[in-house]
Image 1 (tube, rainbow, N blue to C red):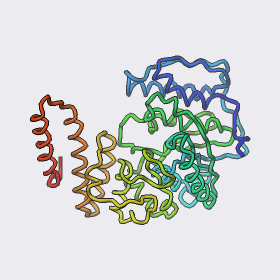
Image 2: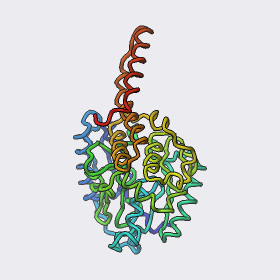
Image 3: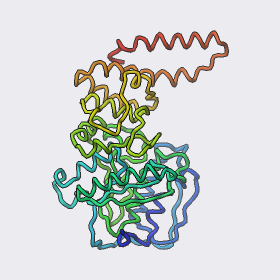
Image 4: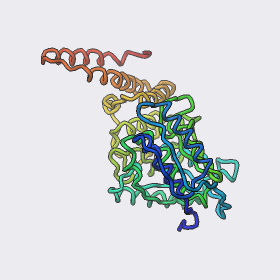
Length: 363
């Protein structure tokens, strides 16, 4: 159906795999046409990854037999957005619908829904259910949903959190004859400075001569995105944030991302409207949820601030408890007492600390 969008170039394949080459420390030899503007951006992208994590990402050389710029005059000047059905992608889609995006040439005309990224290739049923629902929604919105399938994640070297931005950009480069602008929904805000694979500091570097890559939505926090989407009925039966236990459009309701999203919706008094969260949210679910990584705690800190602002003190107390546990558990896990008595003492100490967390407001 999108045959006229496809190019005979190798740009998309280079973008999909150059981060893996950095992990392996192997140079890349390209046979085919490669955009000089894109290559220049790839080298700067490499320097940023190496600057962030010099011990993990090595600078590699990329040589090509034929450097040629994108010079397409596409019949369809499409504007695409990556779409997974998650919060970030729903927010970006919402912002660039015709009723919200004032500049017509920046309104989303296509969304890219890829099987093989957050939905494993072997899970055919989850992808089928999600695709059918999203396709029906896009048809009502006047947007074309492009379905794709890739095994690119099998080559992420176990570093998906740093590879995914480049891999998300590889597909629109392959479809370069029909697209002129591509939105990558943000994960963090401009204030956050965590090394991440989709980031406002690097996404644009993978633009080509006729394809602009845009990191989108970084002026809104996760909670602000949730508040916006909570007013959009199209999301009520389709918001899919869970990747640990994908099951069609049903979220597991117990993993880190599910708990964070459900808590946000509960603060907004909107949780019951979202059919994709079939299980009830209890206080112990929030308290027992681990937020061990710094970026996870930063997302939940936003939710805590919203709970306090909206006078949801019971939820605020649960979130403070969970955040403290997220800080405490990794530290305690490093301790390996040799005796059962010492282990029991540490366990008792942990219970004493956590039992008083409810009274802690500022830390």
